[in-house]
Amino acid sequence: MEKEELYNRVIDYFKKNRPTAETELNYKSPYQLLVAVILSAQCTDVRVNKITPRFFQRYPDAETLAFADSDEVYSYIKSCSYPNNKSKHLIGMAKMLLTDFESIIPNDLERLQKLPGVGRKTANVILSVVHNKPALAVDTHVHRVAKRIGLTDNAKTPLDTEKQLVTYIPQELISTAHHWLILHGRYVCQSRKPKCDECEISDICNFYNNKE
Image (cartoon, rainbow, N blue to C red; front, side, top):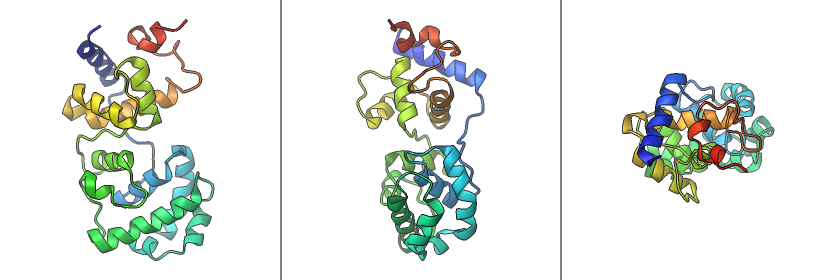
């Protein structure tokens, strides 16, 4: 199957079976989403959603977080992965929002990545979800699923995966495709035990059709 045909088949499947796909992180503002995505690094959305209600009650905006005590922030997020580093990143991010960006979440990749705790993946999430831009964030789920299906070839890094995906996915679907692949990886094409028997695109999946 040619690459373009494969993409078309995969996209058609998701458009039909998951027409609405969005983040499972709970948030009510761009600030809250940025905090949640920083917390979600190597941590589940379920865990983050348990942490953030109390966190946002205590730190409802960048102004309150910027002047927070690191130990106190730690006490609110200690159940997530790497809470020490994330405490410092969150406070640093809030301070920079105040001093450099007038408390407004930047709308371009370069400026977003200047914020502590914000790498390319996090920046792309903000661009796509908050600013509705055609940005595709690649996490472990997206990287794995794209490789298994055969959407990418020899993509060794998340950036490799991102570049190959955006080459074939129509611009207006890029933001949605990010969520399609994440959710497929989270609930069907799981890392250790992919549910190939339940997967409705296994007939065109490179991983499934090359299993021994």
